[in-house]
Length: 306
Image (tube, rainbow, N blue to C red; front, side, top):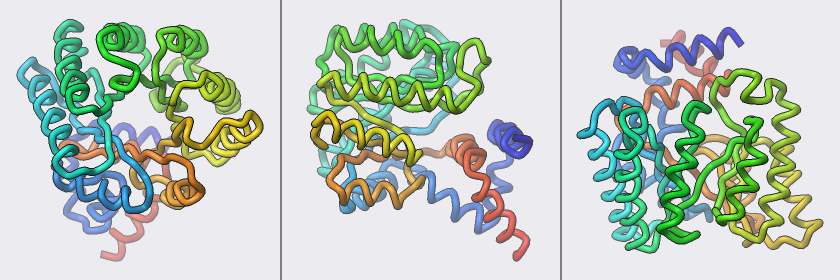
């Protein structure tokens, strides 16, 4: 826990990025979790995923958005991404974080920016997933998503829910009434126990409950997990209930459990990989290290070797 907390602290020290990238092992490991710093590098990574039978979701990394002009820059970036998906023929949609679109500045600005991206996706026959962030913005994220969903169809814009939040079961029931395409994940933010289940067993149990509700709904959802127990629970439930492999998709992060990604695709399951890219990759990368301590020792060991 101490090592994890230290890495999370370091993830907020953007100034360490230049120092860390002087070390070849560190720089090499970043390419495992981050597809590159620009759209073309991400396109190349997605081509490789497509060749393995997986689809993708672009995610532009930028945690430093502080003003209106920068939020509008995010809109233009995603419009370029959607254009490149069409031009290259790669199989991918996009994921957006509303904080990058102005959520810490003004909700209405955020809605306008998100709408511009969703409108572009609709024009191109593509799909936008609205990511979920910390619990302090959960409700406003749902509110903006519902406005977007009222204007665009089921296969143009979707949302994410987090199984570790106590409120999520109720949220899922409300979202399915709209209806909405949902990505189910466990959740990765540091939340107080009154908001999120502190015990992993409770989160896992809630994840399985929610997964069953989603798969039984008849709507195409994304089951996002790297946990073999959650994967097995999903496969077992789908087989038991006669739910075809084409009725849902598994989702994983770029560079995490590649073996499972390949195996699921080979087994005929739909597999989507969340592909992050961007110049401000450092905070995202450090959080991935915090989740996988073995990677920390790999970096340190190789640094000591010189």
